[in-house]
Image 1 (cartoon, rainbow, N blue to C red):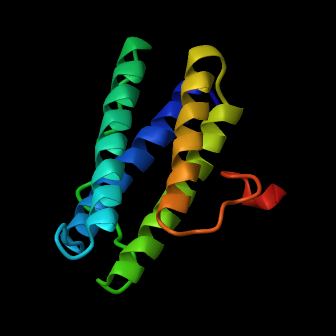
Image 2: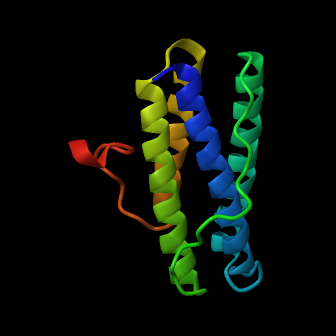
Length: 142
């Protein structure tokens, strides 16, 4: 596995995260659940920025960035605040696992960046109401 392969995996995950967060945003209400709405909106903005950063990193390394798929599977959670929170938490756990993989397969600036992304994803699971993981991104080691 090369660093470019790891970054491509992360880019594919970011495309999926953006799709899912778009759907979750439609299931929230800024007036009824302002904290949840802000958490989803912040997550969307963060993952969009990460997608853009990964696209630039890959292009800078001479790779063709992985394109987004036409569609992605949406979480099987009800369109309630609790369902959105569970879906957001599960999505961030999946992103943390992806960034853990990137950390393990990169070095230097790419690894440092992935550590930051892993940390933010792990922190956001708590923002969605989940209990912190012992080893975020590595459930098989906990």
